[in-house]
Image (cartoon, rainbow, N blue to C red):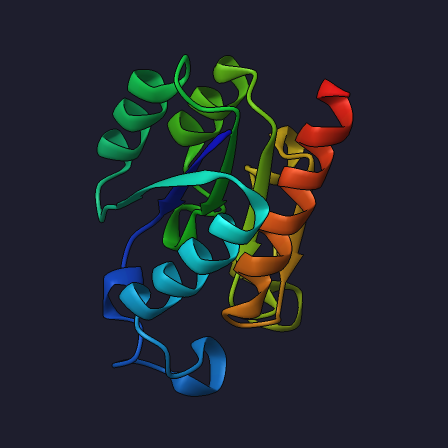
Length: 147
């Protein structure tokens, strides 16, 4: 089983910005934690972080036949990434949306997600462990569906 992990704009700056919202771990550290858990769960991860929506869309389109699910933190594209949303929907891959901060307790513009309508679920506010929760939930769901 292979899971695509997409990271949106500015997540490459984790560990250097707004620790009160995003925590202190870098993106590379988060990915290492995810890879460790993925190994325990018997799955592989493919990662992409991009500050460009089109690159994220291209990756979904390129990998849609090679992966069984998606974990996405759309970051700054959460409320405006309609081409990302459409690529997720068109892929028909089960997708979990993750946010490090609780977007529902922050500024009004952060509270609306165009991605959530095409995701099987959303995990927000748990900082980096939210990615582990997303991975566990998605892998569990996929294993249950294939049984």
